[in-house]
Image (tube, rainbow, N blue to C red; front, side):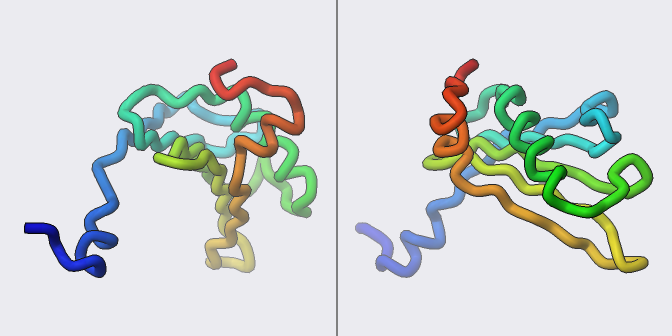
Length: 112
């Protein structure tokens, strides 16, 4: 017997592989995490390039700011989340959805 549609939608989530390492930092010390809906290692090259681009548009002293980024290879899309602490104790974030479109525009292969 199939669950009702509202229950089926709630069951769409599945376990994700989440990885990080103490040495996973970008050039400014932003801590990096990866999430994969496909249970495999996330290729970070395209994400790191996109992270550098996103950071240039935000006026933050990155080397002296506590921050982290999530590189997410989702089931149907890839996206980046950048978060940092500002205004004394406020978590601020930016999301860069549709990393595939970014990569296509920059001619960076998904599995480069």
